[in-house]
Length: 138
Ligand SMILES: [Zn+2]
Image (cartoon, protein in one colour):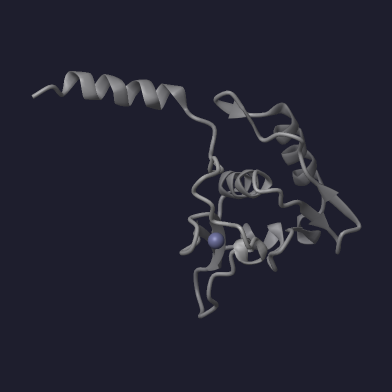
C-alpha cells in the first residue's frame, strides 16, 4: 500500500514534469505553479495537495495514468521507480500487471541534461551525513 506521503511525493515528481492531476475525466484539474522552494515543498504545492486530499480521491488521477489516487492508497498498490526513468510509478503488489509509467507519452524523457525531479532536501539529514563523514576519518 502506498502511504499518503508516497502519493504526495509521486505527485510532486510528476508535477515537475508538467503532468496534472485530473478530476473526473478532466472536469477539473490540479497543477501547482511550483513544487519545490528551497529545501521544502512550495506553499503552492502544499495548498494543491490539501485541495486534492479534500476532493474525491476516487475521481482524481495523474494525467496519463490509469490509477485513481484512492486506488494507490489501497493495500494492493505500491509505488516503485520506473525501470526506464526512475520516476515513481504505481505497481500492483499482487497480480501480473506490468508497471505503466506516465513517462510513456513523454518522447523526450528521460533527459539527463535537465534537472531531475526531486524531493525537497532534508538539510538535517544532509548535515548528519556530513558529520558522519567527518567523524569517520580513517
Ligand atoms: Zn518512466
